Every structure is written in structure tokens, then in C-alpha cells.
Length: 162
Image 1: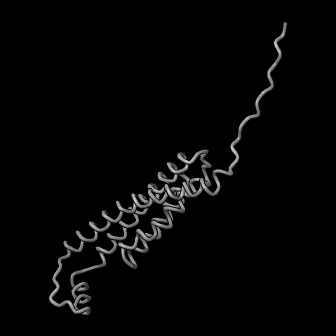
Image 2: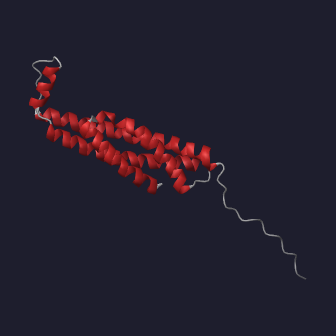
């Protein structure tokens, strides 16, 4: 569970940070779909739970770990965006798309960047945890049922000594 969470968590930070800086922070839940399912499935591969409940629980925890890492990546991306954006750039962009006299302050830019980062990050944690549950259940259906559990053969009874 932790191994899968850390592996996919690092991937989540890198991809969501890049996505937040270069494209748009709102696109992070799209990555959550792939990362949450994959992390939940890999939690089953690494931990090999013995029943469906344990598999879904481990997948959910792993998805939440990955979502928390993604939250950090999205938050760092929003800080970078807040440093890059300024009111002049936004006003010129808005005038290009036909919205004139658009006025925004640097404080409003920071508030919107950080507000979106927190809201989307919290949604990502829940979203990836839910998809981690689905990934854990998927692993159990595909691999876990056929996974042989190790049980000891029954011992033969010893006759009583007189």
C-alpha cells in the first residue's frame, strides 16, 4: 500500500505540477482517473490482500496517498502561476477574446490561484481514493481470486500412547 502510494505519488506530483503550470490546474482530475485506478490496482499487486474488503481498503488508502501528493503538486503549480501572472497579461488576453475593460488585481489573482488549488486538490484526494477503491476491487476480481493463499496441510493425528 505505501510502496504503491509513494511510487504513484511521485508520478502524481510531477504530472500534476506540469499540468498546473503549463496547461491548466483544473485538468488535474483527468490525471486522477488514471493515477487513482493504477495506484489501487498496484496496491493489490504489491500487498496481495486475501479478500475483497482488504483489497478495496488498501486501494482506497493508496489512492488517498496519491491524491495528497497530487494536492502538493497542484498547490506548487498554483504558486508558480501566481508569480507568473500579472494584471496586465490577463487584461491583454481578455481584450483579445473580446472582453474589454477587464480589471483584476494581483491579490485577486493570488486568491483565485490558491483557492482553485485547494478546492481541486481536495477533490483530487477524494476522487483518487474512490478510484483507488475501484482499482483494488479490479485487482481482486482479476488476480486476487486466483491468487493461492498459503495454508498448511492438516496434520495427521497422533495415536495416543499407553
